[in-house]
Length: 384
Image (cartoon, rainbow, N blue to C red; front, side, top):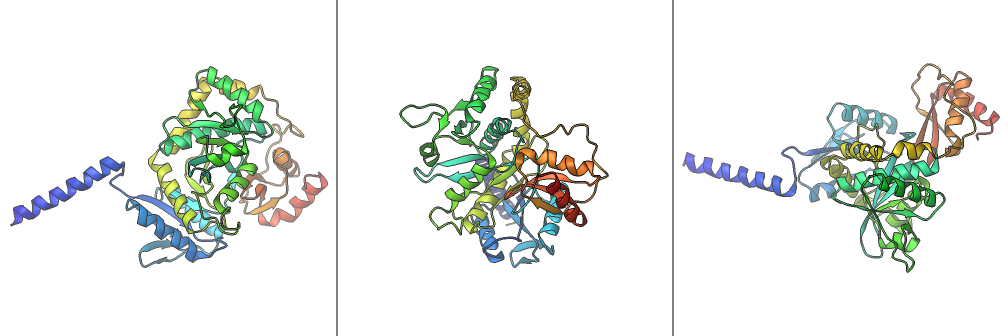
């Protein structure tokens, strides 16, 4: 009898192992943290999205941050969104989480998110790069970097040779020429071709709706609008019902996968964002980013970027920042092209500040007690 029970256990374990091999699962669950603060639809909507994600993927473990948890969900207390983000970052650093999903999170300048949507014309998935943050203060340089981030993300999500299209907007032609030069230098990727009669790699609105390109390159502010439109076009705009959210924040230095959702994101998008975060972990996204940039650098990326002239108000390299301070206050309303010059103006007055990108655009982060003085300096220099 004992031998029969042992046999049954072994058969069950082998079957589980076969499932892991077939579907690419690991033997340990992918741990995703989800913060509960900020949703316009309430905490229950976030929890409903979590439950939906868990029902689709038995290899997930989701931890609520800012909640004591529920009957079947673990939680970690936090009093507000700032504390929740601090807890989230600490858990990611400690390896207690593999990735996180949150909202209203400010990334450092140079970090941008890669959105993932379902296009309405043909129901095709498409990566919009980028949707929040900014990869570079120069528009054309940002578009070039966005393409590489988009390629890495699409590969992490299973696209072996993702096609790349550039949305036809300011800077697109120059970015197209630079990417073609990169391609000639040996960086391997495939341009998408417009479905319009005259073709070409510059994408029109028609191509966007059809999902012609796997990776659609655009600037972050345009990408943010596109995400909102494609996620909520059938709900009147107040409830994002489709897609996977605004995606992971990426730069060449990022060591944590933090995916962004909107405060208007409903349960289906919350679930999609959790799935997206897990797929980014399982697809080794951060390693792929480094690999893609290494390949692009070998093909001449740095020379291409250096040849693009940057238009800034003043040189800031020689300005030494004052002593480091904790920065939890945010000042909005500064143009992205002037954000570094604005920070430099504060440093010149011995006031510590950092640049960043929030969900609504560029921000300058200062200590709470320095906000009033910082605003006065920025106003005197015509930055706001």
